[in-house]
Image (cartoon, rainbow, N blue to C red; front, side, top):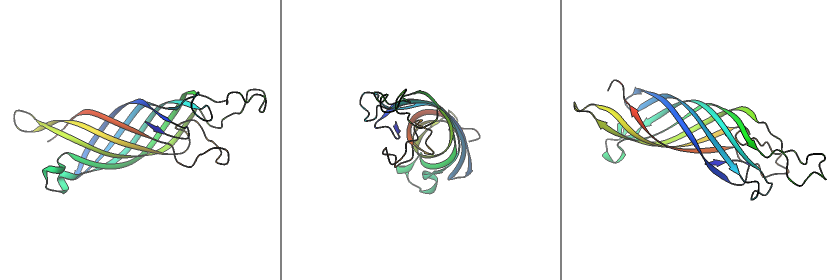
Length: 190
């Protein structure tokens, strides 16, 4: 789900691959890659007739605090939160570049929405997730089911492809998107 300069975000998809290593019993460090589709707007219902689709790639480094290692409680078992920093490569595959019905005022094609179809921005992910650990026959934890909610806050205007002037459009927040994911983790060396 996206929150950008367009009126309404839409649901896209994301594929994620990550590798994490525990630095301390309660702190892990990891690298993550995402490939997905972020989209929003609607040419018919958006006040400025804007819509976009962004086929993105992101690479981030992140740290997580594992709460059940900090607090000795079954209530927080498997729960973690974290943050990171990285880069997102934006590739706008569908965008309304010219506002419909403005050809007379802005000849020949109409009002051109400022922005780029390809860009790279800094991204800061914030995570909250849960691991449900599964032990093998010897009692060692080798697998975990994972559920994760991630807010990706971008620095720049590349996520939606629009870089609207503030005097003309409501452009008072950075572009961001949520990723909700479920997956399976394999645990090495445990």
